[in-house]
View 1 (cartoon, helix red, strand yellow):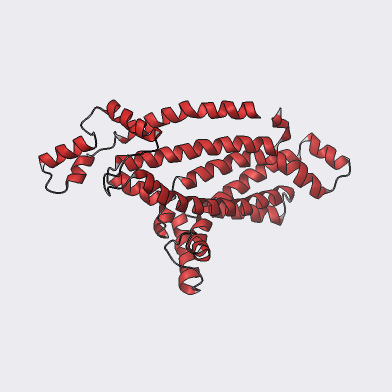
View 2: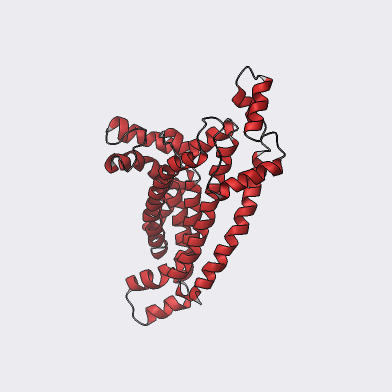
Length: 313
């Protein structure tokens, strides 16, 4: 186990290095010039030259990358070209918001999708199976922006139970914070729950037909024990992978959902940065997102071993 973790952690370093090269290179392929954006409408040549020198935009791209990489290695992601604020502080402000929203969404997805997939597989061909598949079809085909608007209309305008928009930090008021994020979390978790349900059902159907499940039943074990202790643990492996990837997607920012509910998370931050040619913010946010993706894959590998004893060898 320790050797496995050591090898995977060593693999993170070159992976992140190549990711940083891609992020920095692709960012500079975007059309437009950040110096012209910052210079304003007059675009005085002296001001533009000063901006280029201040942010090293007059240097060759490899030189800019080296300076940026040195800063990242010391925890300095640079300064936002638009609002003159350290990118590290921007990420520290926006990341907890998106993490809370993503955690709630993935929890809702697991609580709905996995039980629905298990019931659908165990009750194959029954009304339970058809109902679960209908739910999955509805969840996958329903646009997030439409569902969000409908939830606002029902729970905020008609019933008045939840706020229509805005965000309250957990540190200020946890009740108000949950109330402000439960609807966007459900919108995001609904679609993921549908995908998890289909994967869980498929994995469970395959496992339920395996020899060790038939042996467990032949030994007289209770059906509940066969399903939960034998079949489900082995069927969770692909679901863990999917859950980790979906969580990484949520942490990268759900742009439409955050815009509809006015959630100040990663989604709005990255969109504003791209439109304003704010190189430092785009590079910092994407690098943090890529790092989270890689770490989530590592956590998924560890979860495989914990869930499936056969992988421990």
